Image (tube, rainbow, N blue to C red; front, side):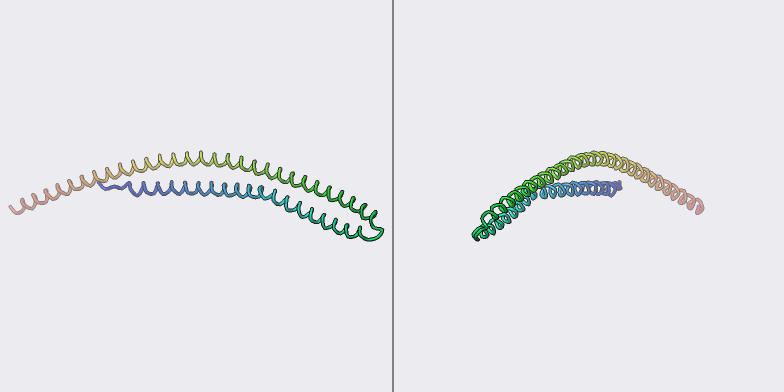
Length: 182
């Protein structure tokens, strides 16, 4: 008996592999987005530290300038008042800076956590749907293979019957030829 089911089984297996590869690509894409979000979150601390350091360096530069001004005759009182005002301004700037980064980091982290939760739920739903699809696909494959085997069996039976009919026709033809010759 010829094996008519091998191409069908191979086709179904190829389709299942394609589904799995598509699922794997989706999971990798989501994972890449998560890693990117976490990397951005991780860089916020570094960025805050660097910006804070720039502000502090600028403050030092202003203080150095005021130190030079204080060396001038009659500038001591004015420089001290300016230094106090500048320090107060920089303190407010650094406090605001810290608060702003805390807010941004907290909001971004909340967003990342929400995204992670949402994608986990999404991936779980996709996984469930993929499992159901693969199960239905395997059932369809089994039905297709069974139907193909039945049809192949019927074709072979029909071929056997055709051979019998041909043999009978040949036998009757030979008998008829023999009767005509006799």
